[in-house]
Each structure stands twice: as structure tokens, then as C-alpha cells.
Length: 103
Image (cartoon, rainbow, N blue to C red; front, side, top):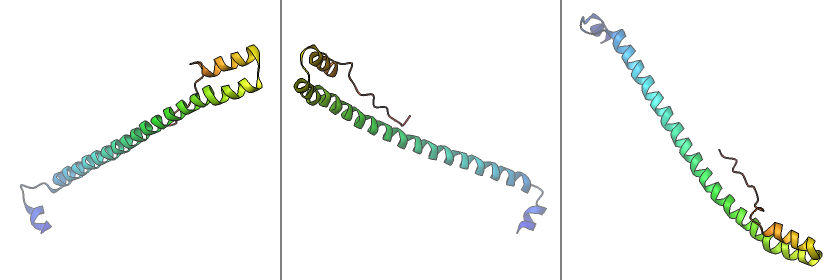
């Protein structure tokens, strides 16, 4: 069957083969791009979920420091030292710095 095509003056087998290879390369490029985009989307979803978890933990830690630790300091410290510790732990300055490792 290939002999028939090789003798056909209207078909250029090497040109058709080259076009086929180029089409395959383009399909492979598109497939790779799709795979990369899917992975990026998955990572972005994980980042968003982790960020929400970190915010909840941050709020819990701030609440713990503002209530539990402050009450413990009040029992152990007296005077201005106790007041300063309470002010520091209940201020907006005191926030844990929980960084998301997913960039």
C-alpha cells in the first residue's frame, strides 16, 4: 500500500509525515499545559484551604493568650508588671505570625 502512495505524484509523503509530527508535538504541548494548569489549580486550592486553617489557629492562639495566659499572669504577677503583661497579650500587636508555606 505504501508503494502506491510513493508512486503517486500528488502526494509528498515526507511533507505529510512532517505535518503529522508537528501536529503531534502541538497536541503534546497542549496536554502538558493542561496538566500544569490542573496542578496549579490544585495547589491554589490547597493554599486557600491552609490559609483558612491558619487564620482559625491564629484566632485561637490570640484568644488563648488574651484570656487563659492573662488570667495565669494575674495570679503570678502583681502591680504594673501584671498590667503590662495583660496589655501586651490583649493588644492587637500580639498576633502569631503563621505563614503559609504554599506560595
